[in-house]
Image 1: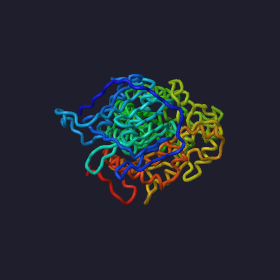
Image 2: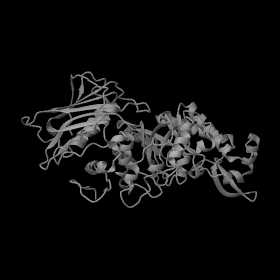
Image 3: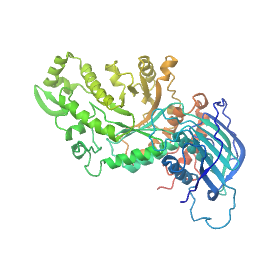
Image 4: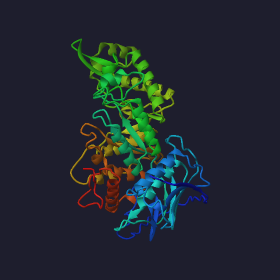
Length: 539
């Protein structure tokens, strides 16, 4: 495929004024229903312009801080050319005269952060203006430009004769929440790298920006550690075919970066660690029955100094492999049975002055792990269980709310933000649960800041995520279970609350977007009765 890049001059104009009204004018029955997720301010008119693959160019504005050679944008140009013109063949029309006027998409960015990684403070704001023969995309960063390219790609449509058009459009856009994540569980069922990359594609189409990689858990330890290779060689489902090598992990991180997606690893402990014990002797707590070992093991043993030496070395490696400033430490669902039965643990508790309170023991362990990761300049994310028994955790820790379905999570939001802690909401978006009917309604109508609390408390909700736990999910059903149901959450986390409160108005746009996902090779399940012009052809 040949994609031309040009450097051209152009005014870089930006406005701080945002439209308060949403005006979507239907532009014939073949025009797009809209953009998903809905931009902050969006005006469109019936005036349309032809777009032809043979005379279409992405260009850098002369005043842009990023220029040709910017890895993020150069890659995005190639990807979006193929997404806009899926039937394009480079040999078509190479010779001969130009039949159409060129259409130019000019990109200007303020900061040329082309080789960096997206982070928690990265701006995704952009402005997009489409007029005759030209689209102007202005953004503060390359990450905002990538989001704007996604929006532009959704604006281009075909008529019944196969001709491409785009309507006159003005968009000013910025996400509502900075953290918009998808959790994949690769322990309960191993997901091939290609399935993860496909999910990253779909995430970018939906403007999600964090891949929460719940990479290990009780059933298997597929992460291949260079420091402790026995963890995967003895703890994975298969030591060769069901592991993520260091090369695999780098591939996922590099691929995600080019989409403006952060990769947040989770190494959950002290519970959910049965697979860890297979490759690391003396890490787990021996369970006792009647004063003798029963042969079974419980959570990580918090009484041994060797535990913290191991964790320090493991997280030093993890911190060097995963560049994101966040690291998820888990901390949920710890069963105290083995700790309670183990005489050595009980002696340690008495020595530490914990008495019979095992929540204090767990707090001691988590605090020690947080100190380890803090020394590595990482911000810790933990499940809300940690707050339940340890309310004095560091203020920069992020609490992940998973309890309180269906509505009690609002009380959790109020309780935790009142203590001044930042939170992520996951409780209403466990999308691995399925039901008959259009359950996307339930995901769409969640309002993360609709809870009892001050405005300052509500600002502490930094975003949320869709969770896909893997008990009944592997590569065979991951994509249709996830999409387009997760798209409902994507709009909730990106778009303005007041403009996207009506599911009836959202339905035709989501239905149209689901067809776009099919066109792009994402096997998204149907919303309801109907059809797409281009049905999925992967079967």
